[in-house]
Image (tube, one colour):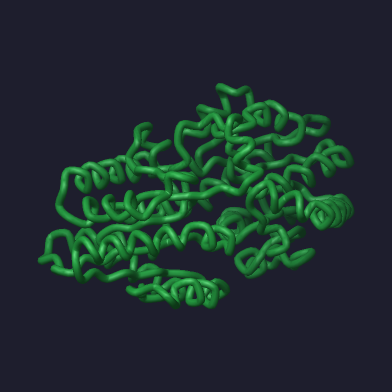
Length: 392
């Protein structure tokens, strides 16, 4: 292909922006003609030539209560984005994660441009709840690019659009691979007598407010039961002040580590971790850090827990198809439970060995023959080649 290509692309969060950047970079390597971008994204997509329609951090919301609070802003941005994409008349629309926003835009764009192929990068969590979304997507999505290996089977079972597992960018992340190798080498060397525990209470203010006090209880109990221990708390720059304020009265204070380099150093050095449920649990698993998952959901989400279908929220558990990572949610998040797991996982125990074996299985099941960005780009170009006018 040597013709010019206009791609509309929407990424609502940092993770989606990184996926989009990888996809576009790979697509430019395959496609010989010029590539023009229109849509919404962050630094990674802007590095590929996108001029974002607005600051995509406005879309970084989590939890139903936050969605409801931002509905007026969301609908204004939906209208703005829809109008810009329709006016641009792109060759393809790629929507990445953030379904509360991206799917609403896709529906409206498809109503105006019914022949436009739409690719959904990152499968919505139809395996967790609202499984009816899979069939509804047939009306405005031509293909789904999945980042978890079990998702194509789920989408087929639920009658959703064709889905291809393209791999997860974490499996190709050089920092993660270096950390994984460092931990493997460390496992064969003399271990420090002082155990290192990593605390990961989340990157959102609400997550940190709910979880960090319980992590503090665990820290106190660990020291009381075991004596000297080292605690590391990686965080992002925008949350550093909040974290420091919350730990200022702790009797035993963790090392506050800010930035990516410090984070991966902590991943390499930690004997075990307690972490907020989310993508970081998969990061820890792929890096080989024994961990416990904890989460406290907002009050509106608590009212809807009966509609959640999945048996676990930990991605490594879903990929392995058994409980690799222990989970504590809401009222059962307690320092005593977390501290005892840290004791077992930071020593050479059956629990630690079993978890690392499970993480190795997850790593194997997530491998692909090509980098995720390249595989995703190839699928997008195949869809463009096959798409015929009038088809949706």
